[in-house]
Image 1 (spheres, rainbow, N blue to C red):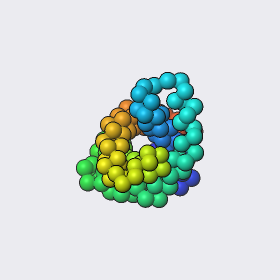
Image 2: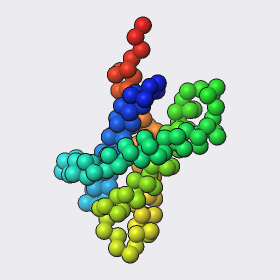
Image 3: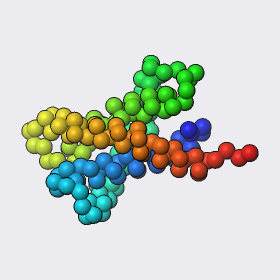
Image 4: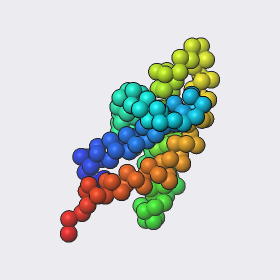
Length: 153
């Protein structure tokens, strides 16, 4: 886990990249009615907009509240995996509705149905975001981060 401000920035850049890219692929696949190789390339168009939004929201707005919420369920004395899972879960709970709102406004053309489209988008995105974060993205990014910032012995 990050120990300095620089490490926190790198960790957030990595985490938001992998989360946003996969969630964009997921949403494009939903819109197209299924997954195809084309989706992976199409996602880069939205990525250049959504990744900075995710970074700014996570780094400046939601990281501290997610930790505060997580530490209402766990304590630093608990096993590290419990702290990781609690923080990751709370981050998804805060970030998913916010990112779904941004995507609704930027890409869904909701018209007067903004609230309904946002709620539907959030409901469709939340399970994917949660499971992707807990089982794949979180472990992958923590591994990459560990390799990048391996403690010198």
